[in-house]
Image 1 (tube, rainbow, N blue to C red):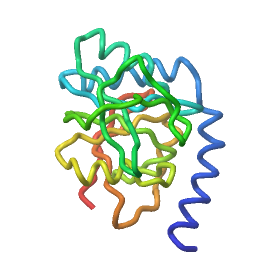
Image 2 (image 1 turned 90 degrees about the horizontal axis):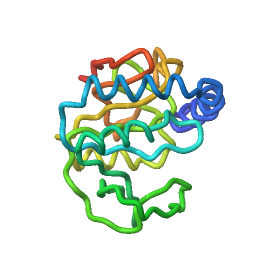
Image 3 (image 1 turned 60 degrees about the vertical axis):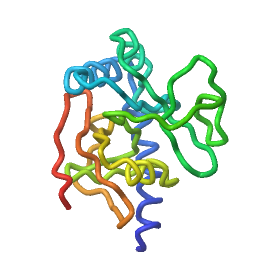
Image 4 (image 1 turned 120 degrees about the vertical axis):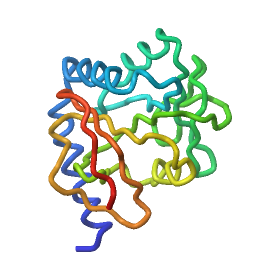
Length: 181
């Protein structure tokens, strides 16, 4: 099986599995664990969750309440930027909410969505390459995946362009990863 085919098959499987893991109690614990582990930073790039993704609404609220800078993804021209979170959001062509405008702004930590990850830092996303492109352009950003414990697998296929995560946060807590492939 080719890498792309392997990833696509795993994406289909993990979308179904993740739907069965979604629950408010786990989402609350993920937000708490993320704040405990990374709350000392000042600037956060946080995806605005939709569907069965680990919910980030509580995390965004807590960060804003603590006076932290919150940035969210904006995709334009095939490139993702971290732009300041505003109340003026619109639906992107990919289906998630994003600011109508904004410029790329530096951040310290990027809380990243995923379908699956492993303890070596490999992350299976949706296949668009937006986060890998962002991470390649911003290597100083701490790369942290948010997910349910059941999304952490023994092995996730990865390619040369895939940029590994440095940590995961699940409902059981934060996990530092061995991403030195």
